[in-house]
Length: 362
Ligand SMILES: *Cc1c(COP(=O)(O)O)cnc(C)c1O
Image 1 (cartoon, rainbow, N blue to C red):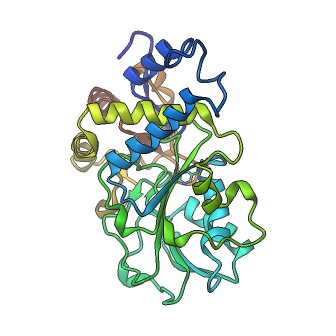
Image 2: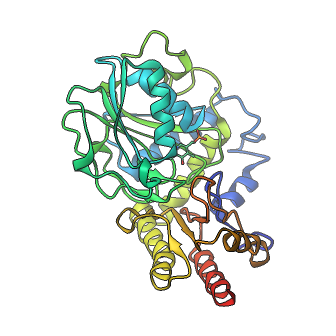
């Protein structure tokens, strides 16, 4: 770690790889020989054109995105995508199934209800405070729905799907905001994957949409032009000024991930890091893991002592130990350590050392 930096466990916006930050710093005054920063240049310039093309090419390569999928760079974050999704994909039967496994999938359903004839809750684990993912046999799916929506990794609750829901011929749409690029994904199993980039990929202000091309081109007439997926595909995400800086970061981060060995290597590292925390959590009874064991996230690890005053004291002690952002989301309480790709193993080891020290002292 570079002098003066701390282990930042923020859920988002979150930690970025230091070599990428240094590269951005180096290129900031003169990007690609243009004599100007990427913050200052026209999105219609040749230099920026090369950047957005490389960002897309890198994503295609690293995720193995098939040719019949479009890659879009949109504004409005993940929330913009789950608002525009029903307008774009929900225009055949006007029915869509939503599996509610946490806060964001609930928010997505709420948006869909504004635009669809029938946005249905196909399953929910709300009564268990979203401590687990609904199982296949719990899903009440509609055979002629336009799509099924899931939130893949539940950032707040610390759960993730370890199975791909079987939806027959109905396209599966997944919000992968907090797990994108953390491990390989078989894109062909999904109709659409989307992510706000500020969790595991780039600075805030951008969402990535990966969508099968046969699913677009039938947007509702009320769809705002800038959120029409087919039009964005046609205009290469430049209907208006795109979020140039986060797009540039997508290129830098994916360059870096490819140098590091790609998503298989990320998966190996992320499993190794998460195991350090979960193995410790399972070995003692001072702290309790908040998520069901079989649905645990590799990216967001939630835990608590069971005593709110102790949790608060734990969080208070973080700064003195060189950590930040360990406080859990208010919907779960306790603590949350977000250990995205850029979090080094040493950060997780240091956290577990602090947890042991704190437990021993209390
Ligand atoms: C953070 C997050 C969102 C919301 O993202 P915005 O870009 O702020 O709209 C949605 N879904 C998931 C899974 C998230 O982690």
